[in-house]
Every structure is written in C-alpha cells, then in structure tokens.
Picture: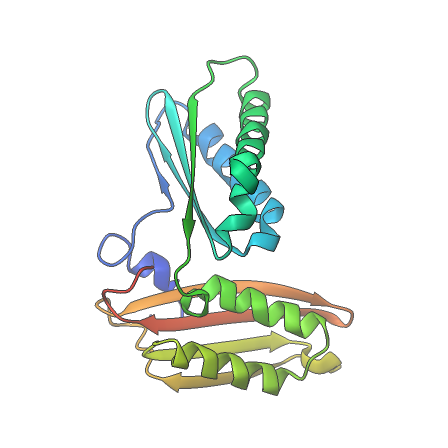
Length: 217
C-alpha cells in the first residue's frame, strides 16, 4: 500500500490538511475546475519566486488564497506593488470565470517556505531544471540527497524513471538516504511528482522526504 497510495492523501486529517478547504454542493463541479485553473495560473506565473503550493479557502462571500514561496520578496514587490498586481490579475480571472455573478472578496497571502530543501515539490523542480541543463543524473541525485539530509530530514528517497541520459530504453534510477517508512501514518512524509521534458523524452521525478513530526509541511 505504501508504494501505491499518494503519501500526502494517505495522511490527510492526521498529519496534513486539504489544499482546497470548502464545500459547495450546488456548484461543486464549477468550483473544482475554478480551483484547478487558478492553481495552474499561479504556479506558472510565480515559477521564478519558487512557488511550492497554493491553498484556497472559500466561504460564502470571500476567497482566501495562501501562496507558499521560497522567495516572497519577488511576489510582494517593492512597496507591495507586485502583490497588488497579482491580486488584480486573479480578480480579473475570477470575474471572467463567474460571468457576471457576484464577485467574492479576495484575500491573497504570501507565506515563506522556511526550508526549501525540505519541500518535496521544490526539490523535484530543482532536479528537473538540472536535468534539462543536461547535468549528470547521478551527481544531481547524490548532491540533492545530501542537501536534503543536511537540512534536517530524517530520510529522503528520489526516483527517476524514463529516458534517463537520453537512453533508447526507459529505465529507473533510485537513491535513498535515511528512513522513509511510507506505511506509517505518524511519519511526516512530504511527496511530490514532477515531469521533466528533455529533448529525448519525458523523465518522471518522484521525491519522498521524511521530516520531523513537528516540522512545517
């Protein structure tokens, strides 16, 4: 079970919480699609700021968007101008999606990621960027695992699969340091899966990081 179930979903409510927190039975389908589109836009727009994840909370007349980034200064901008521009952009997107319906009050908050080397998505994204620059995959895996462990992780596992180093036949490469018990709910496992589109084809990157139970997710 530990190999098949997404570790983040497996630990919902016990160790982690939902990234979308709301329930609207009447407009459930439309709201899910709106959340997906909004998340996609923000992840692409704030790529340079090291965005890790986006949490969305909805109430009757308000929407709170919490953005976790490793470089919050790039999002906020000088004097808060960057954050204001981002808020206007999201407001226009929501108005377009709602097509004349009542616009909810928007609140955007930017939270810093305290340790980027302990965030599985940022680690996987960094590996993908290095593979796109044609760096040797074994060196990338070794250096990344060392950085994660030196940042205070209890364990890390990184799996590459696909046409690694431009090979004609796809294969898998894995590295693990420390302990990563996927079937133990009490362990704070952070997981992410990111694809890297190289000139020879896709390489899938999966990262599991075992953090302290009290560490920020």
